[in-house]
Image 1 (cartoon, rainbow, N blue to C red):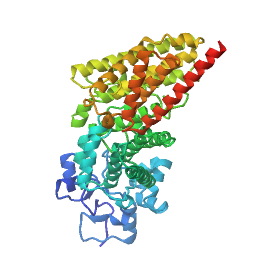
Image 2: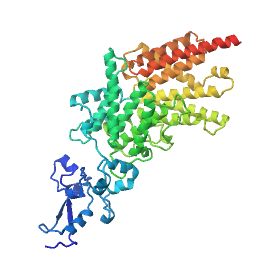
Image 3: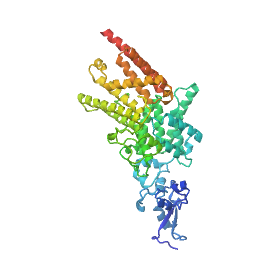
Image 4: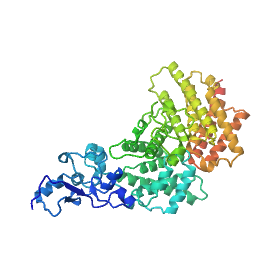
Length: 557
């Protein structure tokens, strides 16, 4: 029996769509979208990619047979990937390149990752998917009890100052055994365990185990990266590795890891989210507001780490563009953890002095101001000396205002905070000290300049010292050995080094007390982060150098 070309064809997938699977509904498997998903107005997704011959072609007139030539021409018009049209529009069949053809032409599904970068238009037109790594890539999956134990420690000790993983999403989605991202979950949990490990170990064997855990996490990340997979979970794991390397002074690995994470984030497209308030930032899928917020937090974390690497040397060029005045900040941390997010919630930097922003949004503000400082101090900055001084003065005042508004918000919302310990205050004080030191270098009479620190510098040092006194007198209030951050260790080191230079090798009793107390804080923090021990050794060398230079100046006099 002949087959009329005017009769409609219906394409069927071999498996049910993902929404029907999750809801345990009877799916009719119609491509590109099943009837139930159309009725419920949900996105219909068929996750598996198959060759064109795997898609079953059925006529509305059952029992009719097609000629070989007709069947071949029909199959060539079908998009072989079993997915829905996200925008509801189907392309002209004769102009559509099938994923089956691309797969055959380029040597398998792994080529999709290369096509994603080399020819993104072909990638989207052919409805290709980036490959998902299999569990065989992972050395040893964690069981459920391990995951809960590790994640509980992580959310208690790390999440409070670097909240880049959605707590609700982690427990509700990532721990779901039906999820397809098990490999990404194993990597993320491994890096969570790594960053929660203590620097101070009771036995050399435990310390060796830490090194093994670090190398294992790096190897897993490398395998995931080379699999061609692009995933937010993989990027989050990469950031945790970079934080671990930064906190334990593993250089240049930390610097290189931050740069690699930045490129990974750009490949994901999350760098565009600072200017967009909705979730449609790529052509493949829509994201929930919680997912958009999580991606935006990951990018702000990268902006922070990228600039933190420049604190010791502002001449070093950041890998990312500076955030602008109209970029979006983050929602309140409590709303992020609960998943209570609305599209208009994020504030922009220009409207950033609201009293209900939360810790991480304040940290993003501090990162923006640190970006301004690094830009001002760069050798290529075009401003003249007088104009530069004016800009630095204005920036110091803005940073000091952020410190005050952070304290006000903490007091009104009953948020427990201590100067220098909260990450946004650590960055604010470090930036003020950086501006002070660069000001000294620009002054011709250095000795005179050192006797006249900025008002904001003195206020920052006083607040840090007050916090140090409080923590020393109340060690149970905040467990530095467990809760300290690398940002806190850095600002304490920076303040101590500043005081050593300020007294010029002749500290009075009050100055000696401050230096001693700051060193005690670093000693406690070194049990959490090895970089604090490195800071202590640098301070010892700095004291010797200052005393030697002072003695040499006396001889010349």
